[in-house]
Image (tube, one colour):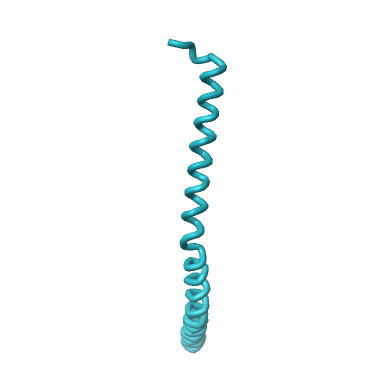
Amino acid sequence: MQPWNDPHRYQAALHEQNRINEEMAEQARIESMKGSNLGYLLFIVAVIFFKPFAEDCIDLYNTLAGCVRSLGNLFGF
């Protein structure tokens, strides 16, 4: 059995770790390219369709808040 601090074993371990890192990076690149356009497109569509709904909700909230405030002023609160 060779000692752990043997330079050849250390270099082999570094080389193996670099190989594993490169394989993982290549796999990540492949996976990211598969759905990148679809995710971007879905995000844009969600923003386009959600914005008018959100604006309507804000307008409705402001209207209801104004009504409640005016009723409060009417009754002296």
